[in-house]
Image (cartoon, rainbow, N blue to C red; front, top):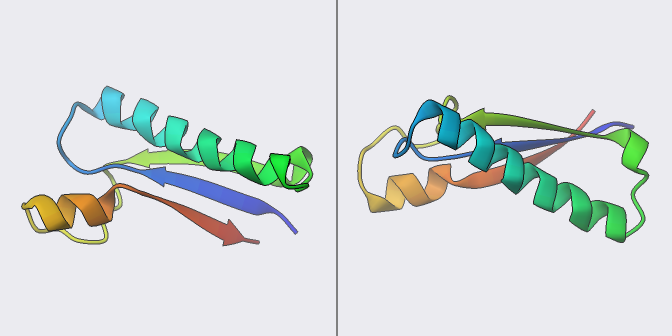
Length: 74
């Protein structure tokens, strides 16, 4: 089984900044899983930046929902 860790951001920030931030978020979760015994070779990380919001509205609660990491099992 492959573990896919996806980092997401809100819309506030440049595209470059948000991609880097999403990657840092995903890497943090990756390190957490590895520390708890998940084989590193089974983990993939990706950053979507602001490209995949769960809430398209433009206020603080929506932005907070969009700042996230999702873990998918494939």
